[in-house]
Amino acid sequence: MGRHADRRTRVTIPVIAGGAAAALVGAILSVQGQATAVVPQLSDNLVTNPTFEAGTEGWNTQNASAELSLGAGHDSRRAAKVTALADRTTLLLNDSPNVVGSATEGATYIATAWVRTDSPSLKVSLRFREVAAGTLVAKQQSTVALVDSGWAQVRTEFVAVGGGHQLAVQVISENTAKGSSISIDDVDVR
Image (tube, rainbow, N blue to C red; front, side, top):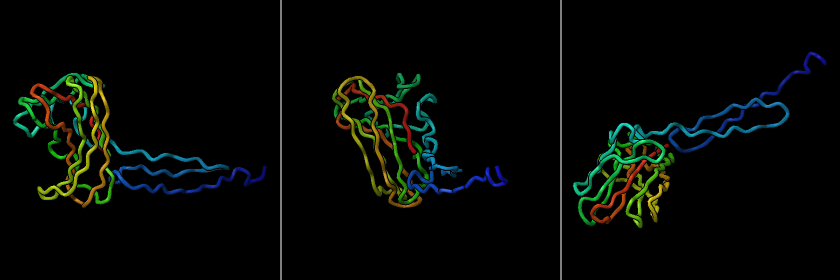
Protein backbone atom coordinates (compact mmCIF):
# COMPACT_ATOMS: atom_id res chain seq x y z
CA MET A 1 0.00 0.00 0.00
CA GLY A 2 1.27 3.38 -0.91
CA ARG A 3 1.27 6.52 1.08
CA HIS A 4 -2.10 7.61 -0.35
CA ALA A 5 -3.92 4.25 -0.16
CA ASP A 6 -6.01 5.26 2.87
CA ARG A 7 -7.03 8.64 1.48
CA ARG A 8 -10.79 9.23 1.90
CA THR A 9 -12.93 11.51 -0.14
CA ARG A 10 -14.96 13.82 2.05
CA VAL A 11 -18.20 15.05 0.57
CA THR A 12 -20.31 17.68 2.27
CA ILE A 13 -23.99 17.42 1.44
CA PRO A 14 -26.20 20.20 2.81
CA VAL A 15 -29.63 19.07 3.93
CA ILE A 16 -32.16 21.69 2.94
CA ALA A 17 -35.66 21.37 4.28
CA GLY A 18 -38.42 23.83 4.97
CA GLY A 19 -40.88 23.88 7.78
CA ALA A 20 -41.07 23.50 11.51
CA ALA A 21 -39.47 26.89 12.10
CA ALA A 22 -35.90 25.87 11.47
CA ALA A 23 -36.52 22.76 13.49
CA LEU A 24 -34.69 20.38 11.23
CA VAL A 25 -31.26 19.11 12.04
CA GLY A 26 -28.79 19.08 9.14
CA ALA A 27 -26.19 16.44 8.45
CA ILE A 28 -22.71 16.34 7.02
CA LEU A 29 -21.82 13.00 5.53
CA SER A 30 -18.40 11.45 5.26
CA VAL A 31 -18.49 9.15 2.27
CA GLN A 32 -16.10 6.41 1.18
CA GLY A 33 -17.12 4.51 -1.89
CA GLN A 34 -20.92 4.86 -1.63
CA ALA A 35 -23.28 7.48 -0.28
CA THR A 36 -25.39 7.03 2.79
CA ALA A 37 -28.26 9.30 3.80
CA VAL A 38 -29.15 10.81 7.13
CA VAL A 39 -32.81 11.69 7.59
CA PRO A 40 -33.38 15.11 9.20
CA GLN A 41 -35.05 15.05 12.63
CA LEU A 42 -37.83 17.36 13.73
CA SER A 43 -37.12 19.51 16.76
CA ASP A 44 -38.46 18.95 20.22
CA ASN A 45 -42.12 19.32 21.10
CA LEU A 46 -43.08 23.01 21.53
CA VAL A 47 -45.84 22.18 24.05
CA THR A 48 -44.71 22.68 27.65
CA ASN A 49 -47.29 20.38 29.33
CA PRO A 50 -48.22 17.87 26.59
CA THR A 51 -49.09 14.93 28.88
CA PHE A 52 -50.92 16.87 31.62
CA GLU A 53 -48.70 15.35 34.28
CA ALA A 54 -48.34 18.94 35.60
CA GLY A 55 -52.14 19.24 35.83
CA THR A 56 -53.88 21.66 33.48
CA GLU A 57 -51.08 24.24 33.60
CA GLY A 58 -50.79 25.88 30.16
CA TRP A 59 -54.37 25.00 29.13
CA ASN A 60 -57.90 26.39 29.58
CA THR A 61 -61.41 25.94 28.18
CA GLN A 62 -62.50 29.55 27.46
CA ASN A 63 -66.09 28.33 27.79
CA ALA A 64 -68.26 28.81 30.89
CA SER A 65 -70.42 25.84 29.79
CA ALA A 66 -67.50 23.42 29.96
CA GLU A 67 -65.37 22.12 32.82
CA LEU A 68 -61.66 21.29 32.56
CA SER A 69 -60.44 18.49 34.83
CA LEU A 70 -57.98 15.59 34.80
CA GLY A 71 -58.70 12.01 33.79
CA ALA A 72 -56.80 8.84 32.90
CA GLY A 73 -54.08 9.28 30.29
CA HIS A 74 -53.20 7.66 26.98
CA ASP A 75 -49.53 6.85 27.62
CA SER A 76 -49.25 8.54 30.99
CA ARG A 77 -51.17 8.76 34.25
CA ARG A 78 -53.15 11.87 33.35
CA ALA A 79 -55.03 13.50 30.50
CA ALA A 80 -57.07 16.67 30.21
CA LYS A 81 -60.82 16.07 30.33
CA VAL A 82 -63.33 18.66 29.09
CA THR A 83 -66.97 18.05 30.05
CA ALA A 84 -70.13 19.81 28.79
CA LEU A 85 -72.15 21.44 31.58
CA ALA A 86 -75.09 22.20 29.25
CA ASP A 87 -76.56 20.92 25.97
CA ARG A 88 -75.13 22.18 22.68
CA THR A 89 -71.84 23.07 24.33
CA THR A 90 -68.61 23.52 22.42
CA LEU A 91 -65.91 21.55 24.21
CA LEU A 92 -62.65 23.45 23.80
CA LEU A 93 -59.16 22.83 25.14
CA ASN A 94 -57.03 25.88 24.40
CA ASP A 95 -53.30 26.40 24.95
CA SER A 96 -52.53 29.33 27.26
CA PRO A 97 -50.25 31.03 26.42
CA ASN A 98 -50.18 30.22 22.71
CA VAL A 99 -47.76 27.41 21.91
CA VAL A 100 -45.91 29.47 19.27
CA GLY A 101 -45.20 33.02 20.38
CA SER A 102 -43.55 34.14 17.12
CA ALA A 103 -44.15 32.03 14.01
CA THR A 104 -41.83 31.94 11.03
CA GLU A 105 -43.56 33.04 7.82
CA GLY A 106 -44.00 30.10 5.43
CA ALA A 107 -42.93 27.52 8.02
CA THR A 108 -44.97 24.34 8.35
CA TYR A 109 -46.13 23.45 11.85
CA ILE A 110 -47.44 19.95 12.62
CA ALA A 111 -49.67 19.11 15.58
CA THR A 112 -50.90 15.76 16.87
CA ALA A 113 -53.01 14.81 19.87
CA TRP A 114 -54.62 11.68 21.26
CA VAL A 115 -58.34 12.00 22.03
CA ARG A 116 -61.11 9.77 23.37
CA THR A 117 -64.69 10.01 24.64
CA ASP A 118 -67.14 8.05 26.74
CA SER A 119 -69.87 9.42 24.41
CA PRO A 120 -69.17 7.72 21.04
CA SER A 121 -70.09 9.49 17.80
CA LEU A 122 -68.48 12.79 18.76
CA LYS A 123 -66.33 14.54 16.18
CA VAL A 124 -63.16 16.08 17.57
CA SER A 125 -60.94 18.56 15.73
CA LEU A 126 -57.35 19.66 16.24
CA ARG A 127 -56.97 23.26 15.12
CA PHE A 128 -54.25 25.81 14.56
CA ARG A 129 -55.22 29.50 14.83
CA GLU A 130 -52.79 32.20 13.64
CA VAL A 131 -53.29 35.51 15.43
CA ALA A 132 -51.67 38.92 14.85
CA ALA A 133 -52.33 41.68 17.40
CA GLY A 134 -55.40 39.81 18.68
CA THR A 135 -56.92 39.38 15.20
CA LEU A 136 -57.44 35.97 13.58
CA VAL A 137 -55.32 35.77 10.41
CA ALA A 138 -55.77 32.12 9.39
CA LYS A 139 -56.79 28.74 10.74
CA GLN A 140 -56.55 25.08 9.79
CA GLN A 141 -58.03 21.99 11.39
CA SER A 142 -58.41 18.25 10.98
CA THR A 143 -61.27 16.20 12.40
CA VAL A 144 -61.63 12.63 13.60
CA ALA A 145 -64.92 10.84 14.35
CA LEU A 146 -64.78 8.94 17.63
CA VAL A 147 -66.86 5.79 17.12
CA ASP A 148 -66.01 4.08 20.41
CA SER A 149 -64.31 4.86 23.73
CA GLY A 150 -60.78 4.02 22.52
CA TRP A 151 -57.99 6.54 21.97
CA ALA A 152 -57.59 7.98 18.46
CA GLN A 153 -54.89 10.27 17.11
CA VAL A 154 -55.76 13.45 15.25
CA ARG A 155 -53.13 15.32 13.20
CA THR A 156 -53.08 18.63 11.38
CA GLU A 157 -50.55 20.75 9.49
CA PHE A 158 -50.43 24.51 9.15
CA VAL A 159 -48.28 26.90 7.09
CA ALA A 160 -47.79 30.22 8.89
CA VAL A 161 -49.04 33.20 6.86
CA GLY A 162 -46.94 35.87 8.57
CA GLY A 163 -43.76 36.18 10.54
CA GLY A 164 -43.99 37.06 14.20
CA HIS A 165 -47.62 35.98 14.55
CA GLN A 166 -48.77 33.75 17.38
CA LEU A 167 -50.10 30.23 16.81
CA ALA A 168 -52.67 28.70 19.11
CA VAL A 169 -53.43 25.00 19.16
CA GLN A 170 -56.90 23.87 20.21
CA VAL A 171 -58.85 20.64 20.56
CA ILE A 172 -62.54 21.20 19.90
CA SER A 173 -65.84 19.28 19.72
CA GLU A 174 -68.94 21.27 18.80
CA ASN A 175 -72.61 20.91 19.71
CA THR A 176 -72.13 18.31 22.45
CA ALA A 177 -74.81 17.10 24.86
CA LYS A 178 -74.72 17.87 28.57
CA GLY A 179 -72.42 15.41 30.35
CA SER A 180 -70.46 14.52 27.20
CA SER A 181 -66.71 14.78 27.53
CA ILE A 182 -63.49 14.44 25.60
CA SER A 183 -60.13 13.44 27.01
CA ILE A 184 -56.94 14.80 25.43
CA ASP A 185 -53.37 13.60 25.92
CA ASP A 186 -49.90 13.62 24.33
CA VAL A 187 -50.32 16.93 22.48
CA ASP A 188 -47.34 17.49 20.19
CA VAL A 189 -46.48 20.58 18.13
CA ARG A 190 -43.34 20.81 15.98
